[in-house]
Image (cartoon, rainbow, N blue to C red; front, side, top):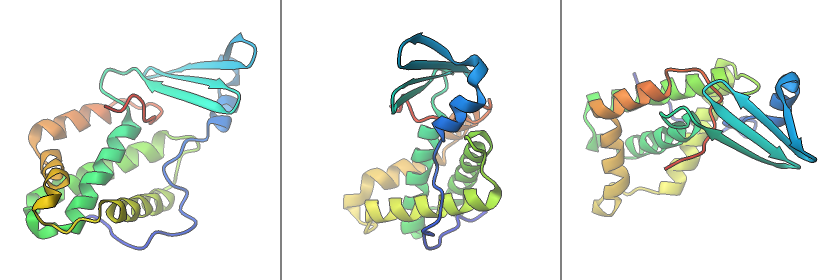
Length: 177
């Protein structure tokens, strides 16, 4: 399995959650504990609180927020794409597989759900942005992101990501430690 690399498309929707649509879809479950405050408890559990235009969404699953995990996988995959010769084929395949699993999870669980083409464009755009941000030269100064990518390909990390992406829930990014 290979990581896809390509130009970021301007129309790529990105990995986002439409909270207005979420609150509209879940209108019957919205609690209003005080004026201007809306509160949703979703499966996972994921808690979403909206005050005016500000939204705070917190994953309380115990395994970690899937959106945060996806961000980490994008970073690892960007390092692998930037310096492929520093990774074994097995490591490259494992990082690619985890990224694709994370993208599929996000696409299926975000609001609105993303189709395969939208998810692919979002992934390509995220990889391009992250590669540009990292600006890796594949030299010793890049040791931290390269070591992180290698760590993602190890069995304990694969098991952890497997748990994160096991239970369907809104793929929020907080708390991201």
